[in-house]
Image (cartoon, rainbow, N blue to C red):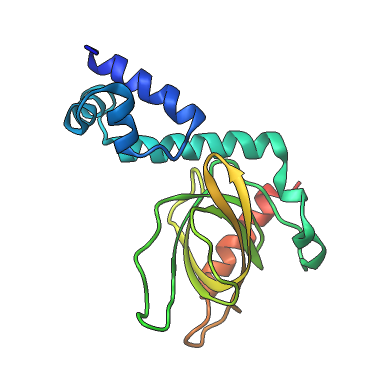
Length: 200
């Protein structure tokens, strides 16, 4: 198959619409071209790697599906919340889990933020995260600087299928204050301000 760079990206796009988690080896088989040529096509046509392009497409797909489903209002977690959650379109999260063996893992790729309040949040993730685990989160809201860093505890991980993200993960934030080991008052102020701005 002889394809130019734009055609290669279009063919990959079609595959990602149906299978958002498609791996490079599958594309090599389906298109009959090498990994190197696919990567060159993405660098030339999109100015990024296939992996970056795929991550962006998954985020776009998740935001579109979340908007259609209004998933923040669904599920048993609603009954246990002290505060109602707020949705900010296109907000993202990067996280890392504290484990017994190593203090911190690497941060995840950017994941969609489902909803949040100053008490906690829900996000979409590729991996199951054990409840009770400690999690460190970096929140990025569109048009807002700087990012907000908070820590909390995993409350639940439930299966989902939104844009290839396999799990919805619920987090309760640790308390806010000035002592060591809890979240900063500055993070609380930032979250409370966003709650007021975006509250329905």
